[in-house]
Image (cartoon, rainbow, N blue to C red; front, side):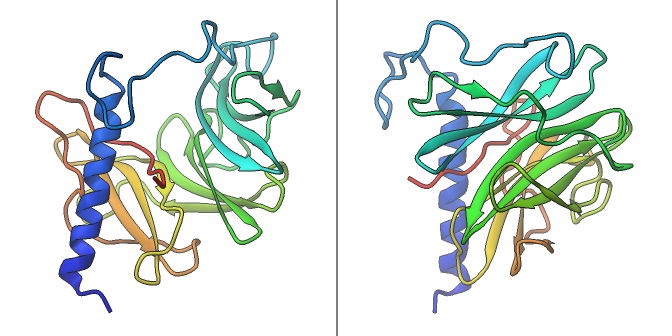
Length: 238
């Protein structure tokens, strides 16, 4: 069985990968990158605001997952009043997407009212999809969870990391990203929290059932870098 030191090293290595991923977003195409240079796959946006209702003002913050031979995308859509919902689109090539005409999730609960649902991050374990998302009621933003068997019909599980509570988090909780495999018999999730100095930093929590989560550290696992506003990036299996 791996020692606590071995486990800490693995978590540190993942954190370094996340830092690299965030840094690559600002790298130039000619940089000497470990994954090769970045090039635009499309000259035009693959999704843009449309219509006059639930996605008229914005289509952004996407996350994708493979399902039934297609690339399924969940994204944040915003209407003219600033309320957010989660939209769904799918593609065979990752560039040309067909949208669903209706949102997947719309604000319904007290922790989503008026502000909406944001920051979708899907992950699949067994036959079930687990979706972390941010519930925002124009006062508090809190990390929430929903489950589905088909990516279309979702069952809310509620807030999994409440705002203003935690070992170091003293503000909102957002942007949860679950590691796609177990480590030492547990599920792990990175998330964005707000420290006492009002800066956004990365936290780490674990779970045995993907529903109930416990903070793993007393301090942010990836503190804010000097000169930057915060630290957050979804994990990917590479």
